[in-house]
Length: 121
Image (cartoon, rainbow, N blue to C red; front, side, top):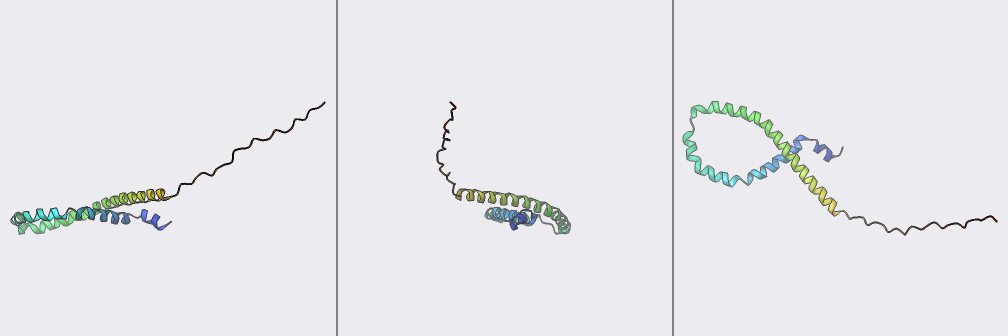
């Protein structure tokens, strides 16, 4: 099996490709999120109660553990789509770059010569 074949069967490879694609998508959204957070920071500070922090932390960690598996699967699927799209585009470019074979000219078919008929007297 080739290296490319091994990579196609590797879920971690697809997860890495999906994570890269997802990260690029989310980085485009960062400036908008920063602006929103700057406007809402005072409201968030007033809502936090220090008594709730330990319970919230346990709930958060539990949720993160289960969500991590879901995210890994989602990233693997996303990566698979990215890899297949790129492979398809590469294949199209390869096909476009191939020279089209020109059909060889054939000589016209010759008719078999009729042999002289032998007649009996």
